[in-house]
Length: 306
Image (tube, rainbow, N blue to C red; front, side, top):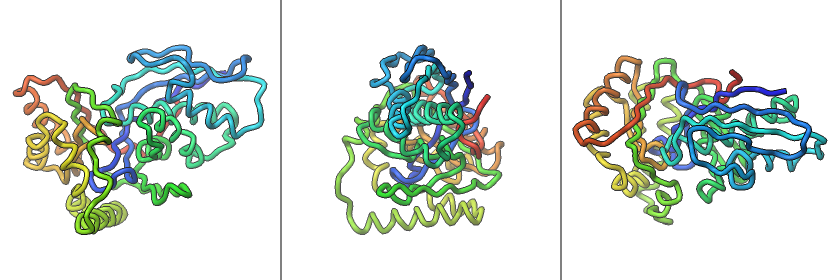
């Protein structure tokens, strides 16, 4: 008994929402096969497209799966996982989250869904902890729930899913350098000024309000990062130019995707998103820097069975 899954890429932080906001992409993602087998435990039997460890305890999907199985009565069968990676590690669009979310979703399906999608987030977070040293949910929550997600609280875990306005599109460019989440975290300060914090939580409230009211201009005004982007953007080649180019071509807002080096722009309508993609591409072409680019509507479903 096996199922094949699409495990979507995600954009986390969304400028103002460090570690609490994320969205799910529709056409960028990994594929995964999860199989029920006689042998107990969890084994990763195949990884295509990336050089990642097959050992269960060293792979994010394995760690997430084990965290979930620990909460259930001991099973007299086990699971095998095959991973087909299309999202590069260190790209900033949730590579580890896609694997973590897919594993727990697939096993949950084969077990007859003992857990809701929202329940699965806590297990997928353990994969993120292995990847970055921090059990954050801003990628795994949208990967599992679809749409936009807000992590209101981590203790206790409280996640709110928010529908996306229909015409909202994301353009994401990934310059082909790897930026480890752990390295991108190391440049952050542990304390921020009250003035910066006030600006930041005003924008978080504005972005959430904009999504609920489908106010595209408010969404755009709220995509501003006072705290993290100034420190991280120096790690990303051509960042300021890419961001400026996105605005000049109609973006509502633009910023670092996750911990980088990918850069995202949100826009109203596919034509604008495509135009932004071409303009971003031109910047990296002139810099002779290899890149990948994605244009995607917001995925309302999250992980899905193929």
